[in-house]
Image 1 (cartoon, rainbow, N blue to C red):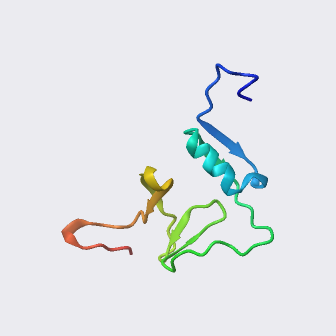
Image 2: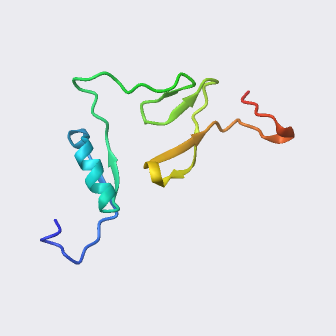
Length: 98
């Protein structure tokens, strides 16, 4: 693509699960491209997460109370998005998810 469109800058790429391989992620990180790649579940077990949430079919974490979490920023150094429960309250110094 670079040789055909040298003046075009790619900042995001959307690929299917056939591209769910570490080499693609490393290349995109090196080139400052944000990848959106469907995860490939064939032939291997599902990813293991902490036991304080689950992941829905759209890739959004669900808290133990059953709420879809909301985005809470990006951790650029680790290449990941942060999420938090939409029902968390910091009022009064405590955290409550009810």
